Length: 89
Image (cartoon, helix red, strand yellow):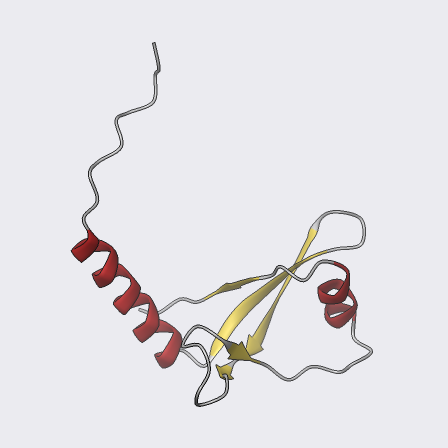
């Protein structure tokens, strides 16, 4: 017997509305949190200014400027999966 509550049914329309709201937020908010895995296995997060990727590219691709020799670049090279967290009122 599981103590977890039942997962509600999620429709394709609900998912599309959620993704549309997320895209609007990403487009509207110029700064986000960039979280990377640290060398010791923890996490580092810092605010960065993001901008869209190439015009013909994926709508979810974001770019941000950093120094090549920065710790965040070293962390992204060691563990390329990062988290970008956006907040919009």
